[in-house]
Length: 393
Image 1: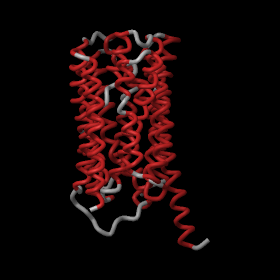
Image 2: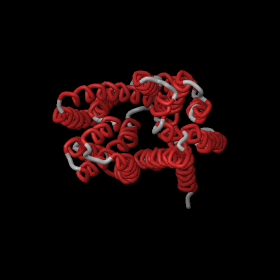
Image 3: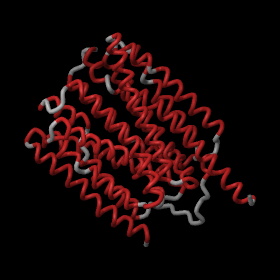
């Protein structure tokens, strides 16, 4: 084997190992905070928090969880200290969860919940940037698809673990304390990854032309992403609908969610691999398909609603894999973390506003919710096409 080929093969192998290690860390991370998030509302209530406090805490946590990403992304790119920013974020993100077991009042628990979201905001852009460096060697779609699949696996396992603890012991604190195990595993794996892969940027050959400003295509991709985020109904509203209409029995609702997450995990792998071969066509096909979850979920019977949840899960996983893969192609490595931060912040704000409007519409008319959801997601498709045309210019 020629020396250049051998070196390229070695680099690709290193990139794949890096993605697997980070993906496993994210699996345990999702297991930790998604396990906790499945019970934080009830836990706050048990500490005497009002419904308004619970809602405010959830909203503030999500808002900070997205808004701060643009700040942490800039810091990562300006300093080049991707691993330091990532490590700090993971430590805050992870240790805030088991600390809930020690919270004796709802103000303290509220602070820890917001801290968990803040930690995730700190580490997310730099982690995505480092993964994108590996994608140059083995395919962006495959990298983000594999990472999203492992994320979704953790997001499925975590709530099931928490449910098991509550079923056996009926104590939220025991559940939060048990989540210390995946939390410590996450931090340990991240620190080991930093030791074995100290410079992930070395996995990608930098472009010869350094672009300081985001190109127009990036902003149109972001606009399309915002349309999808605004039109995508939150699971909290879906679960509320299932319970209110009794279209799905209460004991099946978490199972439907688990099925959606599992489907999304498998879909992320398949669609990520296809993206590396077919590009934007896969993005258009997936979001066209997933846009029709709303009529199935909100109007269908139990089995029809399950099909809708499967489409919902596919759309959720695509947001975390295919969209990241798209913007990598238009952003220089020196601005990658900043771009992910801005991109995620835009999505988070759109999701927040869309969720609020969807909830308001639900009080008036379920058909209006469906029209709003489907129309916004379909609106994203021509914007994707226009962005791609700008990218080629």
